[in-house]
Image (cartoon, rainbow, N blue to C red; front, side):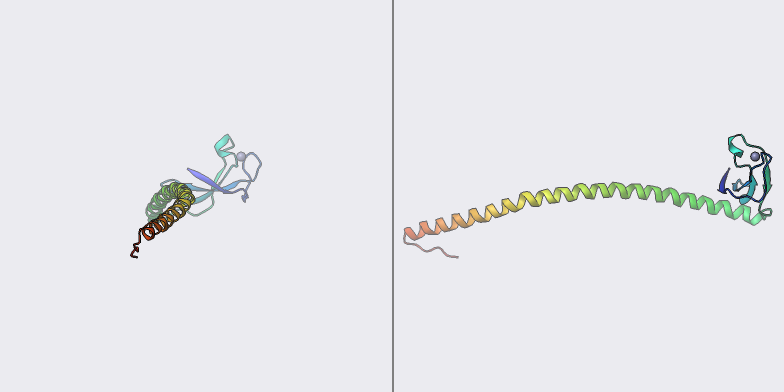
Length: 136
Ligand SMILES: [Zn+2]
């Protein structure tokens, strides 16, 4: 398992192209860089040369553990990003419902206030006509 880090190498492969520097992620050489053919994984030549010195035994133990933790954190981060997207969509829908409620409730509220005040005044007029006074 490897990944190309950049296309500028120091040597030329057997195809005559500039070699690329890649990083090994094998158990024996985690994080160790090497040069290979640009088209190594797509039928290119088998040119290969280590760029970095051999790994010490401690690095062979530590780096895979760190890589495993990094991958776990990356997976957790992807899941959190997906959860955030779901929450953002939920927030958009909730904001739309709130706006709709405001648009509907303001006229209902104003209409209710108008109805109560008109009923109260007609009620008080009614009491006044009967010679009574409303309290409050
Ligand atoms: Zn080549």
